[in-house]
Image 1: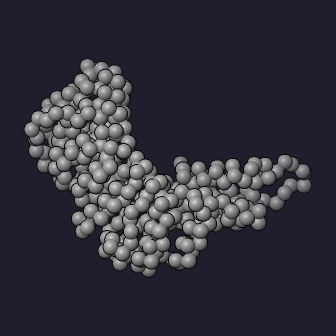
Image 2: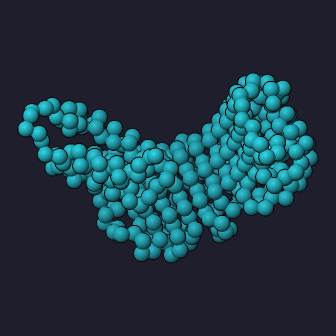
Image 3: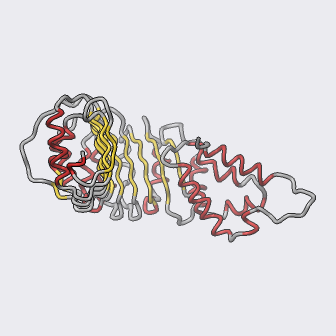
Length: 341
């Protein structure tokens, strides 16, 4: 069982706070045996593995807890920009504890790339948003849970030259002015990973779709033809995850030419009969893994035909997982040829 990040940090504090034994032994304090830069980088990697993808507001306090070990550790923590590069905040009105604390944190991070996780609820705190987005040129990871875009005209969301990962969650109701987020997509030349969970059309992803390698879409009531247009606008994808939420009435589409995805290695589909449309519409010669979960759709024959057509264009397939696809029993096996199914 993985222990919570805060619990592990407290255990670390306890180890370093133990009184020394009477018998002289070699110091176990990393600061006494390793270069400070290396220790800082180790903890930076540890923070990445512990905080994401399940972030909590308490994670922002992990560097502060580490600084309590001793004076030398306090000096080390406050002189290590990477340890302050994780900004997790609720930018709703009244939720930001202290604007000065946010500014101090950003100052301590110096020029380090920022990992930012923001929730923007009702009545956004414009001052806090203005402070954080003023550092957008340093963002390398941005998780944006946005439920109110009334601040869109007051605060610039352009200029993300280092942004590589973007996660957008807009809730389960249509978000007015969601197209304002297009400025992020159009001004992030290094963007490679996008996760979109929204009832709104994810068409913004296609703004610079050619540069994306990973797309994870959770869509609601979206015509599958629209989804295929988005895939077509992202020809260099390596990993695709598509989840259909809500009641999806299956509507067959006219035969069309296959979308060529020459770099695609992994395809995960979770939903209803629309899955068959996607399988019949893509060609991925390097595809090595597919994972399909089939919900509330009795067109088994149609689904198997679509799967067969996909396999015919996937000579390097090594792993297949089918859930609720062939009845109640799940199927998971390795396969190198279509006839192995």
